[in-house]
Length: 251
Length: 216
Ligand SMILES: Nc1ncnc2c1ncn2[C@@H]1O[C@H](COP(=O)(O)OP(=O)(O)OP(=O)(O)O)[C@@H](O)[C@H]1O
Ligand SMILES: [Mg+2]
Image 1 (cartoon, each protein chain N blue to C red):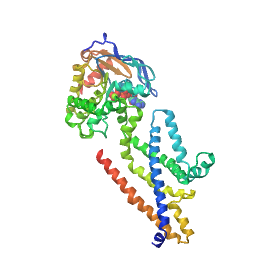
Image 2: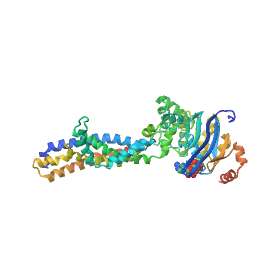
Image 3: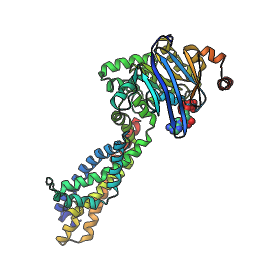
Image 4: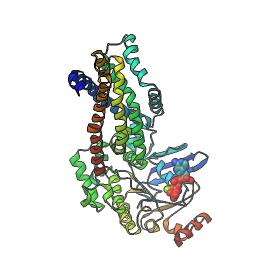
């Protein structure tokens, strides 16, 4: 996998600040994600992980600082923002599949409406992706008819259909029953192996060890620690990280 | 029964015009109300403000005043002439659209924000997020309140009688001109309204509710 030092940053945050009222959720965040890098974001509840993730495709606005994707500053709104969002795939904790559309339509909607792809090309692309994540035979069903693990794999296929440059995952397995976690993580590990650039908020240490190039640990809106998974899990430097790890290890 | 049969011409024309007023006004109110609901959830503050102003202003004005404006005030503005019927349709549409908008906005609020976030995340702009993802889901929960709005519209069409539109609400006045007994005439009008609501609107509502419930 790519060494961040040598590749140009695909995602770059410079001195990013964000408040929710008096709460300073993101404090002077500086972060670079290289092309092909898999970054795992870890930290206690309320530390700002989701907010960080969501600022990268501007589902949340920032107060100041700058965010660039592939060298381009995030547009403020309108058509350019929509176009840029198409380059940034996002997978949510609660799947958020379009409830009134079939599995196939969930995946073809973006390519057809945003990229102007023909329906038959989009169907072909979508079926390929659905096969790849192992839910091809469910294509005609509605989301509610699938298990959580299947829905999340469809959500990954939906994001991939836009051929994004980077994929954001916000706790993609924390709403799943334990027996379904691995089927989703397996798909993500595959993606990582194929060189997808990924930012993954997760507490799944197995995934971090297997697939991550780098782990950042967030607490109270700051990046407190940054290390390889190996270093971070075996030898955390800060008391906050030590304390946090001891808690998730005993669970 | 005699009142009805002897004056079937009055009843037929009256209810025909009521039907025209209702169907056309309901159509435009639905379209305009959907647009205004969209404005009220738009990310652009100016759109939101305009939508809110329209709803608050028109909804809090008595329908009689709105119709009076189009029937009596509008012709004095030197704009192209419109018939009383057209004036009544415009007034009823503008007025009913505010209620449609509020019903649809409440429906939009029942669709989880995750749906529109996912739509925005794949690069759909606001208009498509609204029309492809949010509204189709919002309409499902909006059928019952929307039908209340349309039933109110059906009854509101009678207000147009006061402004020279001959419809069901005017039948009474013409009956008294013909020296017919008033009470039976009024009862017939009321009865036909009930039949229209129970016989057409309510079954349509039930049909739509059932159809969209299965699709969920
Ligand atoms: N829309 C909002 N309005 C106000 N406060 C918010 C909003 N969203 C998040 N917050 C607050 O911002 C802080 C950071 O939230 P965030 O969701 O980023 O945390 P997180 O690290 O993802 O936590 P978790 O592990 O629980 O998902 C929390 O204190 C949260 O209550
Ligand atoms: Mg979170």
